[in-house]
Image (cartoon, rainbow, N blue to C red; front, side, top):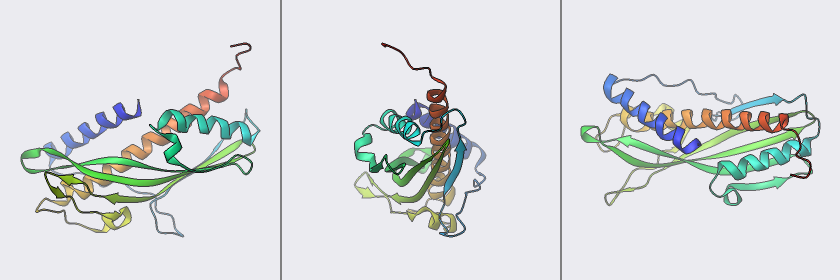
Length: 197
């Protein structure tokens, strides 16, 4: 479901950029201490008080949201209420004649912390890596905070069709991920246990 939504959002964004010829850069949440793009919030769940229950729900969300959650999860500490993973967002750029090409991927870290009746998510450490396109490698953009400062593209392509487009896709995908996480946890919290299945 996330993949289908991402494809639709990407197509919509590409259409918007190609028809309008301009776009607005999203306002990215920048952590005041680290200077990194960081999406974070504390979500209060009144109906569940046990951190271990929230941990189990989040672990299930990882399993259902990622193709291989075992490769994504880097740290799993149920006792201390901590799940940390590393995943990727595929990105595309617009080439000549508005053709769309794979632009590599953006790595990110997702960390979930659990306490009595609440959990916290932190999504950060976004780093762009290029990929091979027709025998040539698209440049690595590096930390996405750098892409905010760069105002030029690559291979004679403008910023709005390359790095800006990557940032927009990253922002949209991250917001989708957060919505999906919150919805899943909320649904599972309200779910009644099935006695005897």
